[in-house]
Length: 173
Image (cartoon, rainbow, N blue to C red; front, side, top):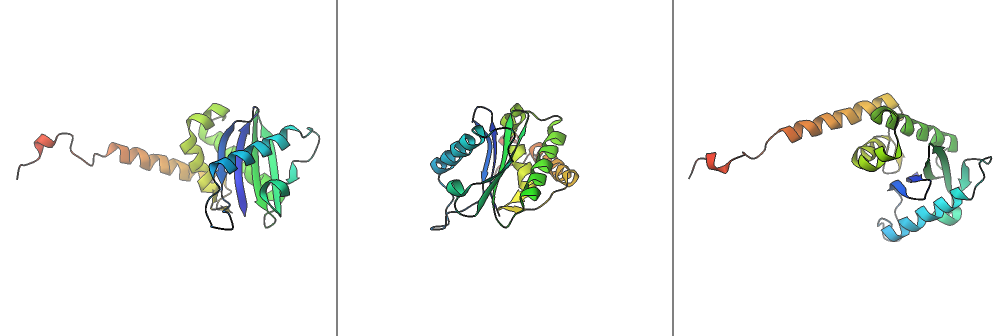
């Protein structure tokens, strides 16, 4: 199961964070303070690693037993997937590549500002790929098609008027 997906810039600012793991005791989502602490810890680990080492990290102290972390740097952004032993590291790296390719197709040469100003679309793209910590789709073309359909439906719903513009035109009772 995928526990978290993070996109962090070179200064340590999270540009996307999606946590899928629940706490074992009460099945509640991790509080924001805990999530921020985890993001800072992940960034600290990534910054301290030399460039010539593997992109795979055992993240037991950060996310508990049996946790692994895969990261990759695209431009000035760290894309990080945190997952358990039921997932394959190379498959996660491939999924990360599919995510970045999809972002590139949707934003035509994606940059950090695209992630900041279009966060709802970025989350929609990620939700088409991963839902509840499980991989749904890996085909970039299928993901783009689904996101385009969502955008089309949003535009159509915004164009519809559910309430007449003037209440004065309503017939009186």
